[in-house]
Amino acid sequence: MQQDFTLSAYDYHLPEDRIAQHPADRRDHSRLLVLDNACKTVSHRLFTDIADLMQAGDMLVINDTRVFPARLNGRKDSGGKIEVFLLGMPSRSGKPEEPAEVIALLKCSKRPKPGSRLLLDGGLTCTVRALLDDGKALLEMHFKGEEDIESVLAACGQVPLPPYIQRQNGTTPLDSERYQTVYADRPGAVAAPTAGLHFTPELLQQIRDKGVALGRVTLHVGYGTFAPVRTETITEHSIHEEYVVVPTDTVEQIIQTKGAGGRIWAVGTTTVRALEFAARQKKTGLGAVEGWCGLYIYPGFEFRVVDCLITNFHLPNSSLMFLVSALCGRETLLSCYETAIREGYRFYSYGDAMAIVAPRP
Image 1 (cartoon, rainbow, N blue to C red):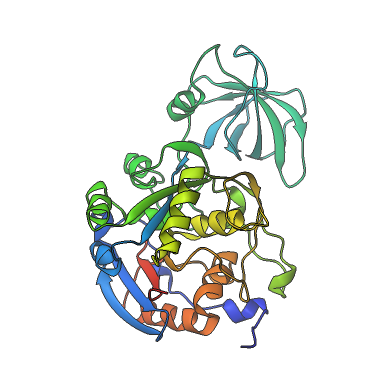
Image 2: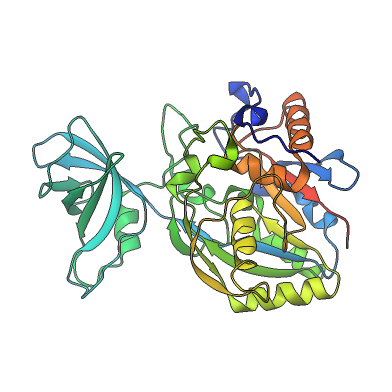
């Protein structure tokens, strides 16, 4: 089948009122568009029905990354306001009393000079060590001795919401809970793996009770997930790298599941990237891996691990659309999106979900 690699081929029109500004009242009460990837038929369900689509012997793989409070407000030593957006968790290279380093985006009227001090809300201070390209800067953040970095950031900063969530009241306390998956426990992401936002502990237990294995990977979603594709030919786009961990126990369970004829269900595009990245690290096939993942998935890609995908509805002309199209086909995906718009589905991070389901091999 001939592929279309032009960027405009992944465009669609979404009315603004379909962009979800708030989460559903209950996580698992989002709507679920189900695509049978064999016969290309669509059905409509609630997310609570996801367990009905799985069979004993299948495996569900989740991304357990946790969004940390990456957005901080404060003032420069000159008195001007500044917003600091951390692009990763600050890390110490030496003793606990030494400053932690981090790269951040700075938003202010005039960029501070190297050596400048920033006083952030909550009393946290940092020093600008160097100015980098694209509005970035290398910062030294001054934590006190054995202070837990994540706890300090939680007291000083905010969990960042995607730029298309625009409310008059901004971020609310509810977002600190609902813009995290219920299984998030490894801080390092600046955006949530949003397909996982629909799961509840009860639903996960129901899936386990059905005889479906549960595996974990970690992929820290980076700021680049919001970066627009600027090349008209999508094969010329450079994907952002994100830190990934695929542990040995998950790899062993996947091999066992596939060997017994079970399907691998990936929760979100981040999980897909992690698993398919791990499948390409060794000549012998799938193996445990920890490092930086720059795997770029677009139509024509050969999936070696993932059979079924649970995902949200993505922005037009985005690399996430390319990835999903690689699994189900571009025209099929656009048809599903057209149906979802017509049927009143909610889109993007706080929106509804889609399941792409393959038959047992």
